[in-house]
Image 1 (cartoon, rainbow, N blue to C red):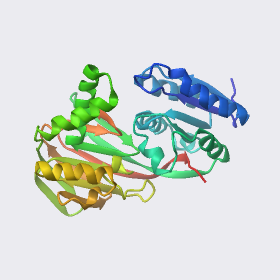
Image 2 (cartoon, rainbow, N blue to C red):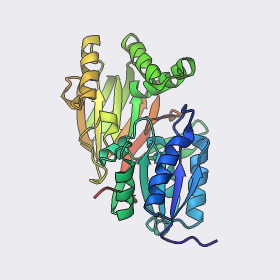
Image 3 (cartoon, rainbow, N blue to C red):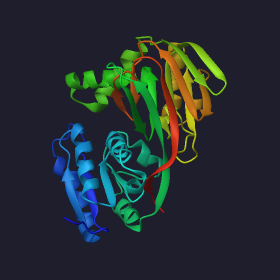
Length: 311
């Protein structure tokens, strides 16, 4: 069945753990109907269903696809788009109505989860900007060559460990906020250092490192100067500080001054080669991924996704 080229395809990804998942959608739906937006709507039930539903929308001919979700849902969406031929990919514009835990990529564009009316009005104006994607290329446990794209960042080391701890503690505590705070508390008394060897520009870092953030975007405050349209990656390499310095670093992260910390070493590059990162977990756009086996490379592909941004 042919789809009108002006009709939006909307993929609603409810926040995990929210009991009344319809309430948020009903608020968005009210605004869409008031603006007389033509759209079709589907809801994902699990994280795994986002890619399936995204593929369905692409194959059905939608040229404007709106993700009502967070950074992980956007990650799934852009990876689906990157499976398409360039001609198909360039005919599609991707937009977001924030509905996740962090919403870091939306926040970069000053898209506020609470301002639904403003967000929809901006999407209607259809201002398109081509954005970059970072890409991690690695070998998996089956010796298969794999890659995964990202809008925000790849984390190696402690930050990825916090993601894993948060997932485990959430099962026990039930609250996202409590699980995040408890994870940070555990990390204060669980010194995390990983032997890594990194190649960044002409620099070779071969030593114990606490965490590395490689950002095409703001990287949840760890690469605050990164922008997703300059063809570059910002990298923050953090050596292990003392406990007092770690607390100071968390405060600087919260207040947007992360790069001012003495243990943070920033770089800007087109490519990062990780020769090894022993026992370090890897996270991508806020989601833990299976740790690559052996060396891996992170680079950037410039201006490959059409993204709807505010005026």
